[in-house]
Image 1: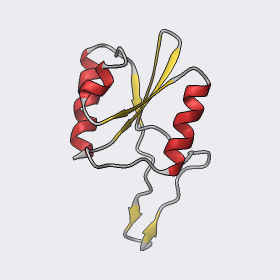
Image 2: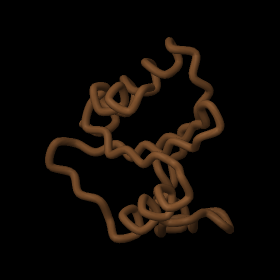
Image 3: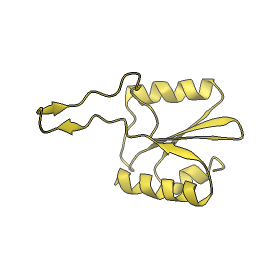
Image 4: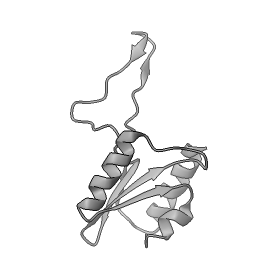
Length: 102
């Protein structure tokens, strides 16, 4: 479900002409090793799924399903973004993205 919401938000932002970046920062299972691959060096846990800058302001968009919860790392990074005058959005639909002026 989250992947569908995320795709819809990315399509919406693309149609609006908003330059954004989608980050998949979940470790991927490597069948050949039988283990998860480590995240790249300096990849921070809790990084938003979608990031963009509009009019000099960072927007971090964390996509969640209706019953999805934020991890402690996502909560901490969201607060850090807001303390630094950015906008942190927990988006359960495109409407949440529109609500912050995107």
